[in-house]
Amino acid sequence: MEQVIQLEKVNKWFDDFHVLKDIDLTVTKGQKIVVCGPSGSGKSTMIRCINRLEAHQKGHITVHGTELTNDLKNIDIIRKNVGMVFQQFNLFPHLSVLDNISLAPIWVKRMPKKDAEEIAMSYLEKVKIPEQAKKFPGQLSGGQQQRVAIARSLAMNPDIMLFDEPTSALDPEMIKEVLDVMIQLAEEGMTMLVVTHEMGFAKTVADQMIFMDEGRIIEQATPDEFFNNPKSDRTKLFLSQILNH
Amino acid sequence: MSVIIQSLSRNKFYNWVYKNLFSSWVNTIMTIIAVIFVYEIGTFFLNWAIFNADFRTNFQGELITDRTFCSKNISPGEYGACWAIIYARWDQFMYGLYPIEETWRVNITYALLPLAIIGILFDKLPYRKLFIYFTFLFPFIAYFMLYGGPGLSTVGTNKWGGLLVTLFLGVTGIGLAFPLSILLALGRRSKMPIIKSLCVVFIEFIRGVPLITLLFTANVMLPLFLPDGVNPDNLLRALVAVTLFQSAYMAEAIRGGLQAIPKGHIEAADALGLTYWQTTRKIILPQALKIAIPPIVNTCIGLFKDTSLVLIIGLFDLLGIGRAALADMTWTKLYYEVYVFISLVFFIFCFGMSRYSLYLEKKLKTDNS
Picture 1 (cartoon, rainbow over the protein chains, first blue to last red):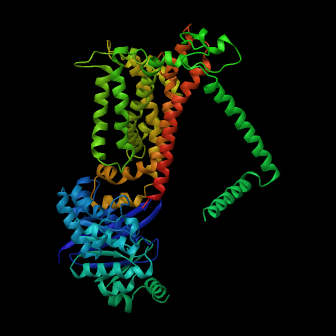
Picture 2: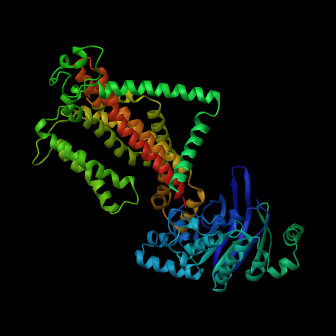
Picture 3: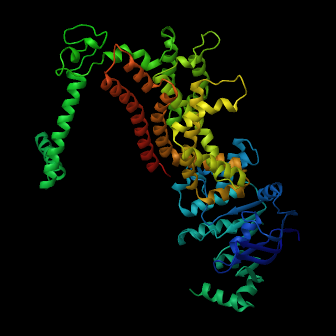
């Protein structure tokens, strides 16, 4: 299998705080990996390192054979191939939904405006809200906003998608509409790295589960093993808390 | 039916008056004192400024050609203002010593100025793009009209004065300071330590020094920095000082707007692969400037009034021209008339800006979607 993301002995500090400790991770093409763990365990930081929203201080991160260094050119190459969806959606409130999605194709890919808008519309259809194209983000519900954010990311045609707790800021009744889009994306073969506590989603979609705590990957296993037969006590405790609440 | 409505609305009026003006003894006394105060001041001022005032002729019907014809100087104590000085000096108040036969050029510039500004002020204006193009064209038109060029005789800036100098310094100073202040505000938040410290030092230095000091400095020191033989005229020196001064204050207003942009927007733009300048232009500035407009307008009001300080380096702005008029023996001692008139002109411009700022604040509150 083709390796698309590789993390080798990655370490990161926020000042004195050691957030990531010797992280090793390999993602192959088309793989869906769900990362879970208690807050402060470094799971968001880890995926934010993959598109250099955070810089790591030790170790190597390679995406599609390009290593992430301070070289801006490499960062640009990697960001073009890696899409990201945030917990807080981070839509641009002064732009319409359509402009939010077509912005990057126009400015980064230098696409003609008309083509970019066509692509934007096609992705809006994919996330099932084409009728909202002319509205502004503030006029949409949280679930709709997150779906626009997914469409915005997809419009750059990435082959890897990072999801940083995409449903954590949503009201319960809106979680499903976002997860449905993500499941559809997974079925189409997208390589996905998802930080989430939606264990139902994990069971449906994930090839691999990763459990992190205190900056380390404690356990990595298939969902079947992970949920039914976790090895570490820390994982067992976490699962019992998250599944029985 | 209409009687009922009338009595209802009258009741409403009485209720409002009772509730707000006479609800308690203290309130009643305050209301009475305030009414007396406003009445006394108001009637005094109106009598002085209008009803007992001379405009072009005195109470004997003679045309006023110098101060001895003013009614109040003929019959002291009975008459009010003598506005004839404003009529006599009108051209100077408006144009300074600009040649009379060329003042049509200034008038055209004055007339075009609102057209150049309106596109910036109102974002839902029809044909706004055309107005914005005109905004960028206007400085060249204004330069050609005011200073001269092919087909028009040159009028040196030493002849400019009055409202022309006040508006020139205010509008040009604000216009030039705007792009500079954006760069300063961005620089102050830059991750590059040298750029950041340069911007911080510049902004804090300018903000820590009175404008008068800057004007003196520009007047005396600017020629030292320039090669021999290049001797910028006084107005240009003042303009440099005013622009730097305004840019530092505006930069701080814009920085406030920049700080209000959530970090997540920048991260989202980064993740999409937008460059720093693309993110700045498309994501950060449109949002930040919108938030910063009210404080920016405040600094503009401050600057517009501060331009009157240039009289200290020998420029004749509106205030300078007024003082020159008072120094003229034919009109001397008509202080009140001159200063009231100058205040009125400044008030019109500053009040306009202030109302605009209020309008924007209301608008921002409603369309913050």
